[in-house]
Amino acid sequence: MASPCKPEPKFFLVDDLYERGLDYYSDKWFAAAGDQKILGEKSTNYLENPKVASRIRSLLPNAKLVFILRDPVKRAYSNYCWSKMNGLETDSFAGALELEESRQRRLSRQLRYSRPHAYFSRGLYAKLLKPYFDLFPRRSILCLCYEDIAANREQLVERFHRFVGASIRTADGGVPGRVNASSQADTDSMPEESACRLREAYQEPNRALFRLLGEEFKSWESI
Image (tube, rainbow, N blue to C red; front, side, top):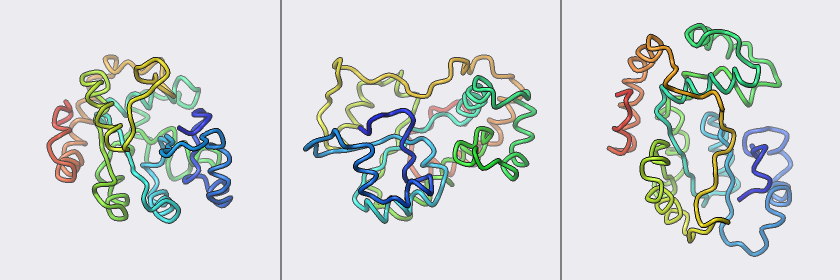
């Protein structure tokens, strides 16, 4: 995997990094990879920017793409907790949801890639996945359910490694820990009114996702 893992590479997202070319990408994050045959990186914001799909397709047309999707209601509140923890949010969750669209229109340049207030829009997974499904063959895309990390951890890890064609090898024989987590992201503390509102708002977007991916995400409480 790309080293260091933090901060995330974001090579295909950040314009001035992408303009430096594939050799820069290789030298910057994979210099220590040696003769490894399978290389990978994790940059969370790749999913939400359609130009990333075309950039990956242009430079790495045979890449395999893995997306881990969380129940969008819980994802939205976790995002809110992260923004609050990092001093980027002072409003209530309900207030922040109301302000999201206007905030996105006047986002400052330094926040244009992190988009810390995109609580609802980041959960419109079918819309966000479409550019990738348009440009890559279905066999090159694997979508996993975040909830399976806890519920079916070994099965998820095995499925992931099988997809990329790698044997399961980590330093401790297990699975690496979380990166970029929010210590305040206790979804049980989400205001019930906001949770109900989000569950309703995500009903049709989730149905669109299930039509795209099949049955594997129907365990989400937001359905």
